[in-house]
Image 1 (cartoon, protein in one colour):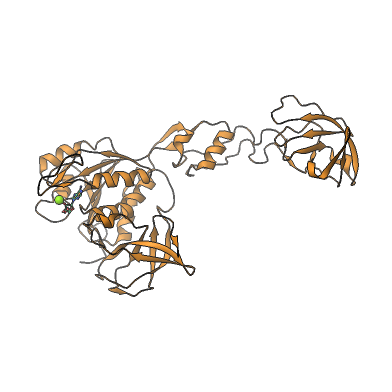
Image 2 (cartoon, rainbow, N blue to C red):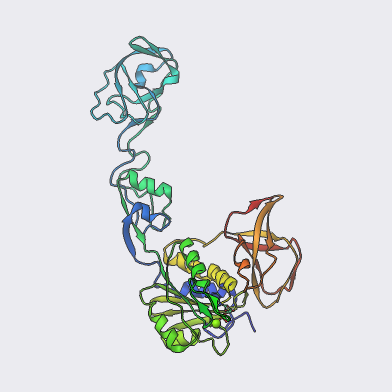
Length: 417
Ligand code: AMP
Ligand code: MG
């Protein structure tokens, strides 16, 4: 067992960083997926596929930033100037008269600035005196005026392609009159559970059978990652069953199988994928959980063969599939925050493997601590939930003491205390 793999040798046991590099390189020519135009609220959480160019300026017209009085600043150069109030301008008023020299106008926030005016004084600094207004302090030109195009000049691109569409981006698009955005398509992920022992969730298992939990768990993980899961009918451990099931994946961008990728006699998934034309880049990674883990390309589709044990399937999805889905969706940057942390308890491990330890993250004394869950058994479904971090314990070490410095992949914000 070696962690260092000769380049291109798919039989080698890869270290996880090299494996992730091969995954991302393996989808380089199909990522990101093609763009589609969608109503902007459906664009939330997706990556812009074009620069958002402003056809008009924002704000579209000079307007008041305050409830107050618009004036020519030259008419209130010294404190105490008194100007007659010529008219009133509310927000939304369509035709605003020109401001006569030596007068002011009552204005409200967002109201168009009357032509001729070049400043607004807030009402707190103005005293009404009958039909006039007295300006307590000197007024400088431009005060409390939002100039047309000050926020977004016409022709500029306030949002660049690749940007994540967040609620503020939806607001900006709406302000520019764009109800649709060009974003990258969400990856469609076919999920295939394999194993003679599996029955669907709505069937009562006979002795020796179990309900398929992986498909539903990974469908949830896909949705959370911004992808669209497609559950294929599960397949037993036979070539015809696998062939039939795999045929259902043709309309998808990614195929994720679980089970049947280790070296047992019944572990047919890998060989079946290969005989149907999948070119595998690797099928073993020096990690726990999840050492049997295959990745390759089947035409334009990315294919992942994940282990059957639920916690292994979930952790390998997190470490390898999720980054691939993000890249396909055009979302730049890391899939999750990775932060330096301290290990909450001593840990013994196989020095040949990198461990992804399911842990709870908490902030204490200014440090991020990761407390391993009591069970790390990869078959236990209870250990597939209740963690908000993966502590990365690198290969090359056999024993880590409490407080050891490790990397933590954060799946949720840490708790305090
Ligand atoms: P395998 O990788 O096929 O050797 O499976 C490893 C373990 O995971 C076995 O105990 C399987 O019964 C279990 N397993 C495989 N597929 C699933 C699934 N879809 N849902 C729940 N458990 C599974
Ligand atoms: Mg199996």
